[in-house]
Length: 174
Image 1: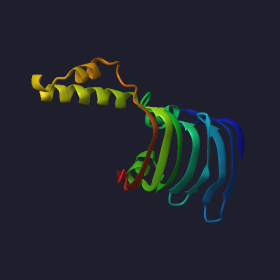
Image 2: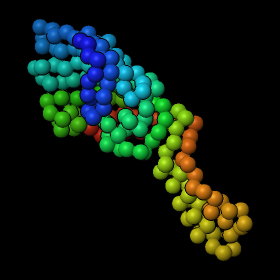
Image 3: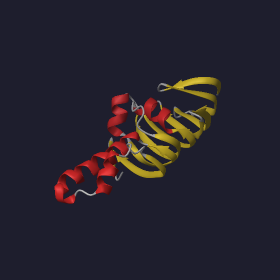
Image 4: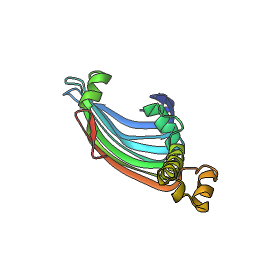
């Protein structure tokens, strides 16, 4: 299966390639899936049983634009910027989108490098302001006042990593 351009859940992918097969047991498999998306590369496998609607997905993303991906997949624009690399292994009953979300299970991990989380900078600012208020007049120093009026932190980071597991549609151990 080959396509120059496709759309996957509100995001454009280019150079899509996969080996597609349908077994006698009505198992549809897409193996060796390979495509470019959001400035990065995705590889993996997908299977869907046409008789019982069970599906599984194994993907590995390399150097994908974290903002584009989080906006397209989770409708979270401008929350995280950087280069994302990660892996997921998920399974569900894919009869409907709702059923899939309720039965979703699996695990994954990610690393975002050289990035920025604007809300992280805002949180740091709020924590500093809160600490200043808590400490009262006696806790005010020239340095704490200068820190507070210094331009807002950018929320930049070198790397953020995370892992998760999901069972019955609920993410655990994030």
